[in-house]
Image 1 (spheres, rainbow, N blue to C red):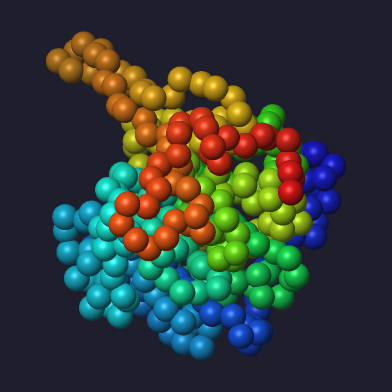
Image 2 (image 1 turned 90 degrees about the horizontal axis):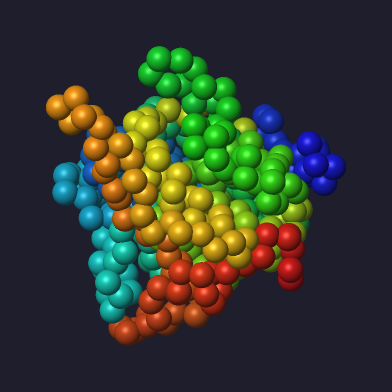
Length: 321
């Protein structure tokens, strides 16, 4: 392991995070669940957070255009439901998870924001306190990533997901080796300070997590990032075709942050139809929303940054202040 990564792992990794009576110090906490057609699980995730009254100040489900009963189930469970079109209505929504996470900054008020995926099965109420622990107890930490064991349908996966192990971690080791100590850089359970989250662009799609990680490292350095063991995380597993599209978006975001120009506008896979292998091409959106602090709440505010331009293009050589 890279020496800096090894040293960081020893001081910024909590293998058994247990915090009691976390000192909020006057800070407020928002928990955000991005959701797209998650009526079967979103209610349980909301219910796992609501008992944390006194630690959590608001629970918001950001609906990303669901066509099922996600919004109704979330509201019945006790969350405040915000549809993506209701936030910054002057901007046409882009597809993707990162879009609703970005809009959630304008829909919430917390000084600290915890993101939880809405497809969790049997969610652990300890996730939120574990993610908040380093932010509330360690000075100058701005981003906390969760890692966990992920049981799959046919086997137990002890590390990250398939995209994490086959794409994200090898690329981080090559392009940003100081971050090679992150167990699961793509994990959907993480927390950050509003100060940080409003200062950086958000990748509109699945590249949002890797983009935030790289930007936290660039802005604040390695010690501003921490990771905590969340135990076991169960969720819906995606097939290889879906993961291929996800990987293409993540790759595009990583290369963008590293100022490496690459053609990632579309991705062609091959499927069998009547015994023949035929191409199936998907358009890949690699675009950033600008830092929220640059966006007012009025209509006609700035939209997507250029594919490789402006704040979206960042070097991959670490903290640049």
